[in-house]
Image (cartoon, rainbow, N blue to C red):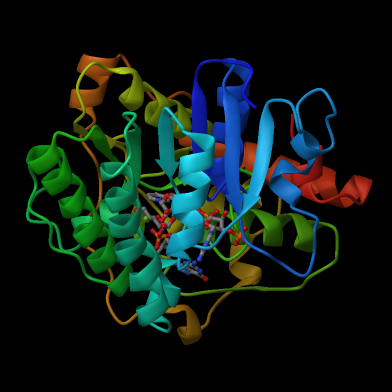
Length: 339
Ligand code: NAP
Ligand code: G4F
């Protein structure tokens, strides 16, 4: 079934990170398998360009139906595909929503990781496992910036589930000698970001207001701060982790803090509009709790794996807003326009 020796399996291949990671691995001559959920619509915008490419799809890229809740199917796919590397990216990834749907969030972000770890423990061939951990595990962080040694103090159901999964990853690595890496990734964005995350929401609204398609942007807490990087750089970090001779945990971050307000100001400056006229506070987008100052120290991955983030905050905002404008002007979805 497989042409090249390196075989990757990606859960969450249709998500922001899964789509960029697929492109990276295909460039590196991997055979890539992805798990997709059954949906009523076969169009999977972020990977549609790969699925339509006859030189790739069915030759070096394969999709399999599966759900994180379906243990038997996950086991069968892993046994059939025999991946050398498994990138586990799937699950409900919205922190605010995790307060509304805590049980399914914890099932997907927590229990599903345990299921996958158990499946790879039972494989006869070794599988290198990447777990998509997050800065949300630090939550009400006891120090700034955070490192791999910072205590985990999550402040949301999502953060709790990711903490559980991160610690399980460590336990399985230490107890059974499995090759398990936790990538403790801080926020990373792109034109492929889901529309209900704050950066994409702002970029999209700035473009739509500029083109007279919308008249206002409703936001929650604009004083919140995040360490925002580029998704393309962060999937490269995932790959680097699984190429090293030993498994470990790594913080992946820019080390720079910006507020939601900074993002708004930069986005509206690109379309030359006064943001104060359009941005309104809507308490529906406030969260019951917010984490503290989440900003990461990525010295370890820079030193050991030679990773570093590229580009600036302003360049990221510009890329996202310009892609939204181009999408409106060409009447396509931004995902279809991406290089
Ligand atoms: P995303 O765009 O929300 O993608 C999530 C993916 O998971 C989608 O492919 C989705 O499929 C799939 N999925 C959700 N529930 C599933 C289920 N029950 N069964 C099978 N597949 C399911 O997330 P992302 O931004 O790419 O992030 C990837 C991972 O990294 C997530 O685990 C996230 O929590 C974590 N993370 C993200 C960031 C960040 O800033 N982006 C930072 C740290 C950690 P559909 O397309 O069918 O919905
Ligand atoms: O864009 P956000 O929803 O990202 P958040 O909560 O930081 O989570 C993302 O990054 C995590 C990594 O640290 C990932 F683990 C997670 O999967 C996800 O990818 O919100 C960013 C900030 C928050 O403080 C939020 O309260 O923006 C604030 N915000 C203000 N108004 C808003 C809004 N967030 C959203 N989504 N929508 C608003 O209208």
